[in-house]
Structure formats: structure tokens, C-alpha cells
Image 1 (cartoon, each protein chain N blue to C red):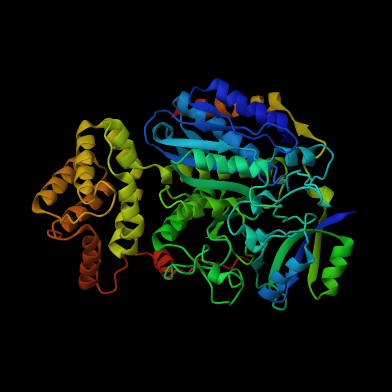
Image 2 (cartoon, rainbow over the protein chains, first blue to last red):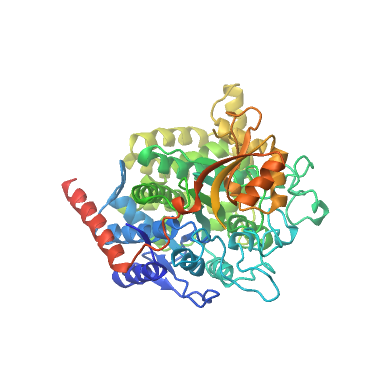
Length: 505
Length: 103
């Protein structure tokens, strides 16, 4: 099948929205430079506070495959949900119940074709390898802005961008000078529940995460993109500057990137490289870094994990390969959704109660993930998230137990979301142990084994504050087993702030 | 002007980054270190015209010309429209439903 026209993609989006009640059109505020509609949609079933994920495609015009990947993915997801079937991507399959949980538990936002003008120019006799949009700013000699250099992340720095409109990496006359990038910003502004953004590009078989401007480090918050004292050193090799990323955030980015990579690899063995965005070339003004940087600027907003997926081995793969790439990338997107699915949020909506989940997330990111025991527990929780969601949906007893666990956890936070002085009391331990025992009854063998570990741990924590509890568990591990292997090499790497800079051959 | 998909090889990472000053259409995400060529271990893909290739070679880089642009331009002049998309999707989901029933 040849590549689809701009009209075909827009009609496909309309069709999905018309055909499936779980898909809604999102009316974006701006049309493209040449006046074309830019369409977005949301796939979800249910209301309440839910986590959102945003998939972007077609930012760069010549990367023709990605808008098609996003619309096909949307169609298949909607159809599988509606007909209560699973999804199969080669040998990789997802059960009907996984599909139901994803659509019932998440808000999935899709903006499949960010740059319709550029695509049209590629397909209709313009330049078949056009990258930018088609803007025509007065006084500039050449057309087009590189949309993935136009976001307001270190836009003025010039790192990895150009002020020359005739280059492929022209950053535009100002940050967000283009309607296409303003639409993406509008989505981030208007959907504060977004927790993950995946900007899908081609090519190179990579899953990239922040930062793109300089190497990551996790120890010196002072070296950060907002600190003008480091202007001039940022993005310069061997300058001593490295971009700060909290250890917990780095950990979560790495876990997600590797999960997406593994999902893709499971389809036909193409192993994408999960690594920091900078690679050998620094960049600024990208969607990935902008989305992630937002929580540093608007400190009250939910943090968005930012990713750039570089699909395929060329911009416009031939037909059979195109299908293969769409299939494998779809599995990667499924893994992204599963990783984002939050059992606590699902439980909250099932029992119609509000728990201080933002405060719990903050605690996880700022404290828990800086301890070895915290990393271990977070991994454990994620590994069982699908089973926990399933249990919450089918079992009243499990819902009650989950509610107890969240209620106990809530005591450690003030109404403002700060840590309270509450210490772990004996009755907390009894409540937690009883709740875990209830879940254990209905759990599979792996979850049972992990609950047994938790049951043993929780009994040691009386009198501890929540922060001290994870530190104390880590200490006990070290005391018991000096060369503990509880933390993987990857998370150790993450703790050191060293990005996994792999050599690709 | 004719353009070619190329791989540019550089002696070191600094030389690779220095390509930015030529403002070429190189693809940053393809930059990598590959030890196959000991003398020029760093590489990046790009889409260059003949004068650009000549300039880069003159500056001390190695350039491997892979394909003319047209060979990898699979979208231009041959597009599919919505009815074909819908047919393709119906085929895919029919297969999915059949497989699901078998399970």
C-alpha cells in the first residue's frame, strides 16, 4: 500500500471518531500555516481523575510512516475495545482484558499529523524529503521551520539549532512561532492529567529520553536549564556543565524507554536503543524536552515523561517494511500505555474516593526512588500493576484492601500534600498486613511472593517516618547481604546520573 | 540539484559535531560511534548535494554515497486515499476478530 495522503489521514481520524463512541475529536485551536485542519482525538472510557498519554506523529514531514502508525494504532485499539478482542502484533499479543483496562483507565490523546502542510508538500510534487513546516515568514529568504526545534526549551540558546531559515534545523523567528507547535502546547496546557508524551519520528531505531541539550547528572540541581549562570557552557562538550535530572525522574524515563524498546523487540527482534536524547549531537527546542521541562517551570503541574521514538531504518520504508515497522511500534505504544496505567488511580475511580495521589507521586519521585528499597518496591509495584488493576475491577475484597492501603498511606501527608509528621504506628502495620493478606488470597504466584516480602518488611517499620522507612529497609538489606543485587546495574547507572551511552555498531 | 543519501565519517566526536557549521541536512539522531573504521570511527547519515559532498570531503571527512534521493522517496506521486485505508483496516481487524474467536 502506498503512503496515505493528508486527506486520507484526516478522514481516517474522522472515521475513528464517528465509528467508536470511545473516541472523541479534540478541536485544536489552530490550523496549519497553509490553512489545513490539524486533527487530534482522545480515546477513553470513563470520567474522573485519570492519567493521560499523548502520542504525536508527523512533526517532520518526510517521516511519512508515523502518522499512519498513530491512526492505525488508534483504529485497532478502538476496535479491540469495542469488540472485546485482544490485539496481536506478530507474536506479541495483548488480552481483551488488558485492552479494556487501558481504555477504562487512561486518557489516550493522539495528534497523528502535527504538520499536514509538510506532508502534503512531500507527497504532491514538492520536495519528497521536506522536513519542516511550510511557513513563510516575511523577510526570511527560505520557507519552513523545523517544528522540533521550535518548542520553548532553551530556544534562545541556539544549541543544535540554526537561525538561518534555509537550514533544516531552523528554529523559527521565536519559540512557538508556528501554529503547529502551538497546537501541541495547547494540548499540554489543556490536559493537566498528561503524564507521558511520545513524539514519534524517524529514523534510527531509538527510544530517546531527556535531556537533549547536555549529558544528564542527578546530583547538582544548580546545573539546570533555567540557570543563566551556565549559559555558554551548556551543550558544550567538556565544559563541566551537565543537565540536572532528579534521580527518580531519570529512573522512570529509563524504565519506560526500556519497556517500549522491549515491546518493539518482541515483535520481530529489532532491538531499538534506549538512551538519552543528546547522543552525540545536542538539541534544544524539542517536544520531548519541552514537555518534561514544564513541571520545573509550573511547579504545581503534573510531571510529563518525555520521549522521542525514532522508528525504522529510513524515512519512507518500502511497503512490506512499512507494515513491519507500524506493527512493532504499535507494540511499543501498548507497552507505554501499560506502563502508564496506575492501579491506584483505577481503584480511586472504582470506589469513587479521592486519595492524595499527587502527593504520593511526589513522594515516590523525590524520596522513594532515591533509595534502593524504594526502587525495588516501585519496580515490584509496576511489575504487578496489570494484575492489581484486574483484581480491583473484579474483586470487592481487593478493592477494600486497596482502599485501606491508600488510606494508611494518606495519613503521611498533609492536606497541602506535604509530608506529615505521622510515624508508622502498630495499628498501621496491622491494617497494611491485613489488607495485603486479602490481596494475597486472590493473587497469582509472583504477586504472592512479593506480598510475602512486603509483609515481612512492614513489620520492621514501627515508629519510622515514611521517609526513614525506605532508608531503613535499604540499610537492613545491606546489613543482611553486603553485596545485595536488589538493584539492577541500570538503576545504579541511573543513580550515578550516567546515561546509558551505548555504542551502536 | 540532485541529492544523495550519504554516510559521513569523522575522525572524532568533535569533528562530527563540527559538521554543524556547514549547515547540512544531516540527521542528528543517526550520529554514532562504530568501531569498524578505526581511522574514522564516528558517523552520521545525511542528504547532500554533490557540491556539499565535495566540500565535506575537502574538509577531511569521508563520505559514503548510498542512494540517490529518488530511490528512497517512496511517497511522492503515488498516494493512497481513505477508501484504501479503510479496506486495509477492515482486513486487519477481521483477522484480529477471527483469531480472537479461535482462542
